[in-house]
Length: 113
Image 1 (tube, rainbow, N blue to C red):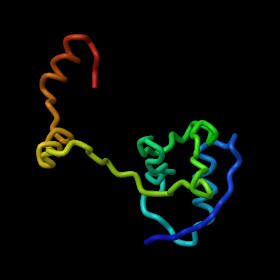
Image 2 (image 1 turned 90 degrees about the vertical axis):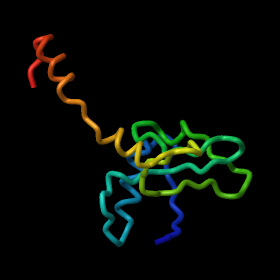
Image 3 (image 1 turned 120 degrees about the horizontal axis):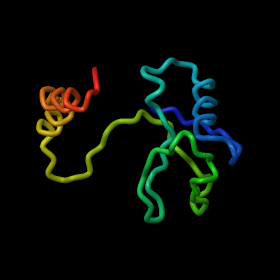
């Protein structure tokens, strides 16, 4: 669902405060609200990125050459930029746990679980 809304934020406000302000203005509930963030699309040779929530908005220069500067409020999802990505292999790497060697290392150093 695409909702367009114009909001103004203080440059010294943190990205987290801006995110909270946006969440308060929404009329519908979102799933997993903590996984939404402010996204800056690629402009003027800069890569697109999600803004870090602890930093102030002034740390992110917004382009003004195309009218009003804008950010997107969107759901954060992992995006792989490599062209030849084997998604099944990545999924396996992200979920595979090699527990016995970790436990042996922890036991030999005296670290308990």
